Image (cartoon, rainbow, N blue to C red; front, side, top):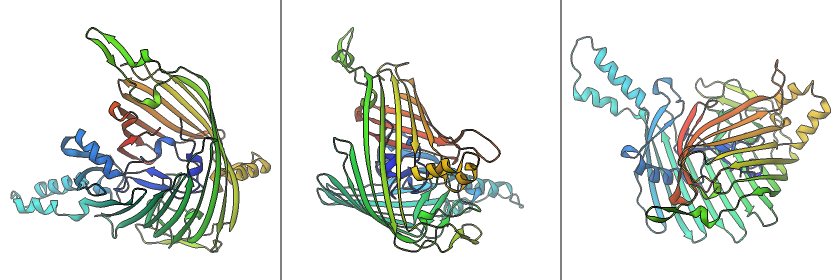
Length: 472
């Protein structure tokens, strides 16, 4: 099922979106933005845990990724590897290394072909290029259990091309029916719905979330604090989102979700056991979450309330990285706000995902309304004037998210996630595609519902390989 809870989680500051921009492999979605694509949601497994398992299936344990660098001469292609991972029963430590080979190869080629004296470069000359710190990024992450229900995770990373480093600490505690999370980062990386990145110098959040009850009710409360001016990482001539501006915010949200099958073909013993010449063999589905053909409808409805305890009406300087210039954002943030959101989903699956060919075709379509108040305001203002309003408030337009999955061969599945906005662009009427992601996944039967996913986002010009377990 498409992750309907994304609708609620995106209202807070802890929804992780997959991104090769950091060694951690994720960035935070910005509250108040349209819901991210389901295919963009980051894996629940830590990046170090992913590399530890993925490394066994790649040559020398090296995992490729693709992301534009700060400097064009470094290239977009990079290679990651897990360098170290000692562990005990209640503690582990991991070190990730990354290199961008384009700059290294270019500098070595220049050493050979631009030598005026026609002398062959020495080993020392070539080795000097390998010692260039700008080629490498290093990240360290450790986690240890305080109690069986409590854990602390610490991480830090440094990019050789940039000054400073990223550090993060997260304390989590599990209660019988709730989860408590305290998280702080210096700085925290956010990504908006346009694919642009923003750094907040300091981001601290405390969150209490309930587990989903049998009735479908779920609620969350939290406090979040931003300090320092948001810095644009790759945005040009754009204003910082208001939710990233300095201030202290208290937020509460609730949601109610329900799902009903229109029809479903239950798994039987004949599906699990197959008779061959040498006897009976056990043949489970490649993914237990895709084992039953069905058609179903589901939906989620919820509301959120936020209160800012610091004036957000004053202009906030936004630093555009690269040239050091600053600009002022004149956006205004309401000190108190309340809103409703909702999502309706229809899904259809053909096939049981057991055979070698043609045993899985699946379509998920859901209509998302991120802000009922913004939509109502747009309707009142009229569709003719909605274009200007939509440019100011991207939440004023409903969006349709479409997910198509098709088995290629065996456990390999091709998938396309797309988001269609029903608003009109300036000078162009009618719906338009806002974002889409291509991916290929290889399901791992031994993990029941685990898969290796290689995805690419044309909008962000980014791609990476991840391990996802028990995730849609």
